[in-house]
Length: 102
View (tube, rainbow, N blue to C red):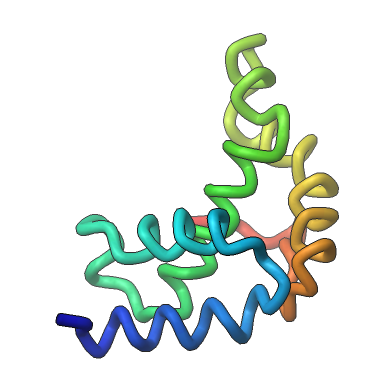
């Protein structure tokens, strides 16, 4: 059974990332519906899941952290790579390097 939130996330995913490959979209959808995202509105859960997925899958964020960079510095250095992936997927929103993530 599909819940209202799952349908809302699926609709938001299509709108946000129209050209995302299916495998990536499924991982993002799964992360957006995780229990710790339950209290968030669907669009916010989807955005946070998208950025986290791209950061950990398509950037050197984890390597930077392993090298001793703090979270904010590693996020700063991966912002452009995240936006490049979002552009590749024809995203309708991009990561603002000046916006604080929660």
